[in-house]
Length: 49
Image (cartoon, rainbow, N blue to C red):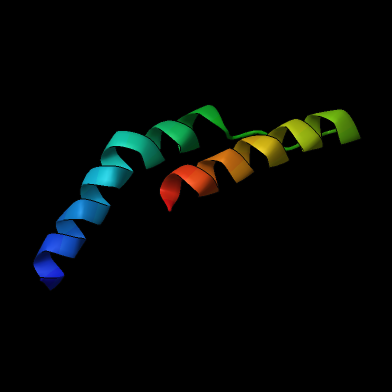
């Protein structure tokens, strides 16, 4: 069971997590951009669950 869970996590990271990290490397330099990044991160969290 543990190995299956690990495989599932690693597969998810490979298919979704790394793509997100590559696309979202910036820092919000103003309030508007920070909110865009925050919304993107919240979406990522919802998908991750």
